[in-house]
Amino acid sequence: MTEDPSHEECQTSAIRDDLAGGSGGPRHLAGASPLGRRSHHAYIESKRYQETESILKDIIEIEPDAPVHRFNLANLYWENDRKAEAHTLVSNFLAADPENENNHLTAARFYFSKQSLQDAVDILKKGIEKKPESYDLRILLGKVYMSQKQTKKAIQILESCFELSD
Image (cartoon, rainbow, N blue to C red; front, side, top):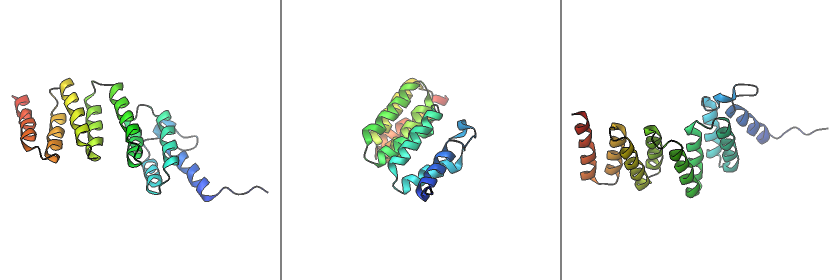
C-alpha cells in the first residue's frame, strides 16, 4: 500500500503548479496569476524560505524576462540577511539593459523600500546620467533625498524637473 502524500507535499506541488501556470497550462503566464503571487508570499510568511527560493528560481527559468520574479527573489534574500545575493540580482538586472529607465526606477524603488537609501540614490543618479530628460527618475530621487532629510538636494532635483519643461 502506498502512502498518501503529506498535506505539505500536496501544497508544495499545488503552489509550484500554480506558479508555473497550471498543469498543462501556459507556462508563460507564471507571473500573471494573482494566486501565484499570493502563493509565494504565503511561503515567505510561513518562513518556508528554501522552498520559496526554489520556486522563484524555477519561475525565473520559465520567465527570464519578467523582473518581478527577480525582485521577489532579491526581496527573499534581503529578508534573510543575504544582502550580497540581493545586490547581485539587482546589479545583474541593471547590467542586462543599462539604458532602460524603468529598470533604474524598479531597482531604486527596491532599495528605497528596504531603506537602503544610498543604493537608491546611486542607481537614480546613474539613471539620470543615461536619461537626463526623465522626470520619474528625478522625482524618485527627490523623494529619497527627503527621506534622508536632505531637503536642499530634494528641492534642487525637483526644481530641475521644471527646467526640463522649459
